[in-house]
Image (cartoon, rainbow, N blue to C red; front, top):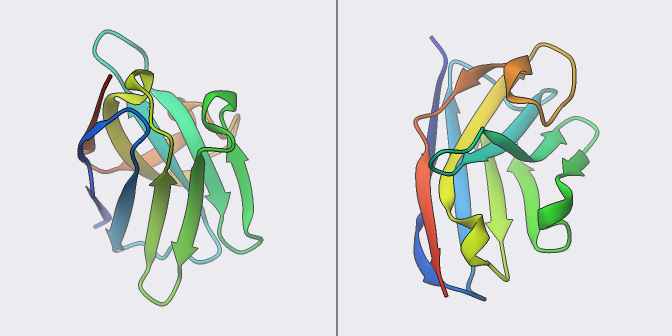
Length: 124
């Protein structure tokens, strides 16, 4: 059984930083695609960043480029999302996803496994 568990969310002021973590059981992040998505109230789930852990290839949504960094630690079977220069519009529930079936990497419908999410709130 695959389980993804996110942590590291919280409340920060604009300009601040947070580091989200995603831990997996029943799934190995090495040689896999892993992604972070977010969903704000009333909005569709949005792809934020993905990483193909074997090739260290990353993809980011335009709104976070230069501010967010997705990374991995294969020894710990963890994936991280370092978020800097946070803005109020980054406020959302953030989800870790794994098990990419195909299609667009930042499209949520292409992913099988999801965590429960961790809340990020950025105040102005």
